[in-house]
Length: 481
Ligand SMILES: [Cu+2]
Image (tube, rainbow, N blue to C red; front, side, top):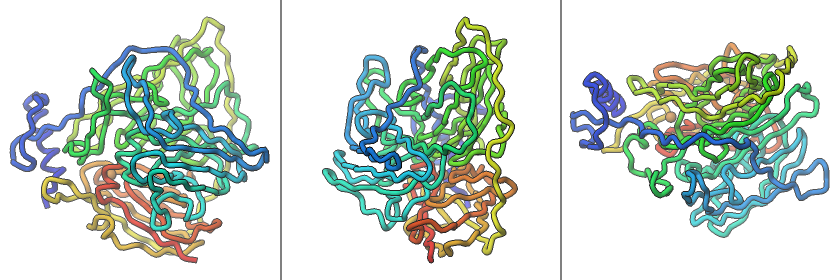
């Protein structure tokens, strides 16, 4: 079957061979003529200096084992481009929303109010929590404009997580509704770092002249590839921020991609980058990385430093092609660590972080096929040949381990995300909740349906390219006692 993407990507190949560019002319979809949909050119505002600090949510509860915060979803004016105002949708007036920090075992209470003009929810990405608190699936009724909801759950796992809406997520997350939640484990080995900061990567499509965010609802490229903006954001500010550091000192960066679709393949020129954690979990040992692919929804904790022979280390998104035959993204400078005149220091990382056990063997094997077809002019994204809500719900048993073969039959990569439970890619010991499944490949996962309070219920799994999830590549697993 000739899918839209193969026709469309074929058009890319034709265009590349002709050395052509996008003249802005769009021919009819599937008309047979070249249908060029290259990514929009990136805006490259001037580099600037500042800080990576994000707003932290205020804990209003005096009990040291309870974190109680208020979040309000509300439109707000944000200055993404110098001197220009963009109306974003925010948690509490900032992008990203306030970082919620708690420690392992804490009770977390979030009083939420929706002051948006449409219904929303908060989904707590990566956290194991009661099904009714997940902000997604049949147990989560969208909160209407003016409505409130109290989220309450325990911090069961240390790590770096995030929160975002699960209603019209492609539009609501893109407008700025996302924030981080960090669970600290006091028993973790102490790390010799001078800073421990969120680095939330996103992109947004703006009119360069006015700063107004461009609605991309019917953009054919966005519908197919997911929406990539023309301005990269680091913690809600334009990219290429310079941070003053001392050469040799380590900073812990908790990298999170809240982008709808952009893949950030990260490198650190002039410095050293060592990965500590993936999604919610510390690795067994620090792992030096020269490049690190961060897909939508995924997190990676790293430590970074400027090497003693360098003045600057640049965290950069380097080109990556996430569809067969598509053009790679262009390189984007995100963060520059600029060394001061102080003499370099030499600080060693610990040799080990946290041991992990392999999961017990699976009791059941499933194949989950990711695919795509067209419905008129619109692409439809599929799981096992059906689009949500027509994908049959899977039944799984609480306490079991299943092996899922995620078979990507399409011509583009898809980031696979499961709610409420961790999985372990086979042949690894890491626990993850979001994993890239490259085009035309199969990724095998051991899914751990380990019981936790309120774990029974229907949980979503889906592609985390939000246009794909909203376009059908989403389904539910009913986890039974
Ligand atoms: Cu996808």
